[in-house]
Image (cartoon, rainbow, N blue to C red; front, top):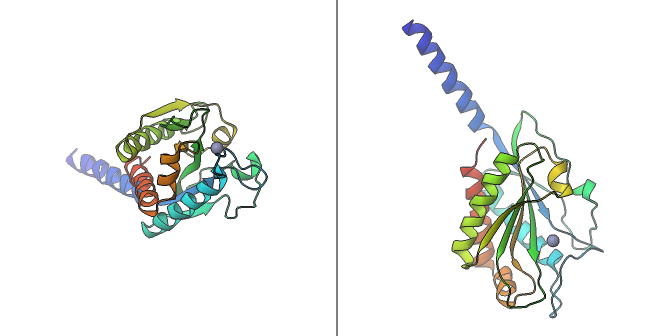
Length: 203
Ligand SMILES: [Zn+2]
């Protein structure tokens, strides 16, 4: 009896170690690009360009923290279809996470706030939701603005079978948010927050 229990405990330990020792592959999607620049402000800042810079910083810190990285877009002029930027499937080699970076827009320049989207229709949506909430809470602390986590029926989120979150870290129409988005220290904070949140949301 004791032997059987010990074997069971050992098996449990081995499987859990195996689960968490699987390398993380982070798929980073810099929103929009090329002909589709997303949101734009009066100063001419484009969501697509700001998000590409953030994506590059996220790639840097993800690699430094032992993750493997896959970028859906690496150039400003690259136009991607929904199909080209999504459709990632789980496998036994990696634990995948998919982060799509965006900035919001509003008619009023004073509007601020963060949005996090996951899709309940997607596989692994529970992990996606937890990750979205975690990043949202962290962003509130970082920029002092409210974070809203929402279930969104977005094509790219539904096409992935890996936990996926769309992160809107502020508004391209708000000067303070744009200033922050261009600040290397802030970029680092946002990216490290995303990396920490992934590490804390294992599955
Ligand atoms: Zn966008």
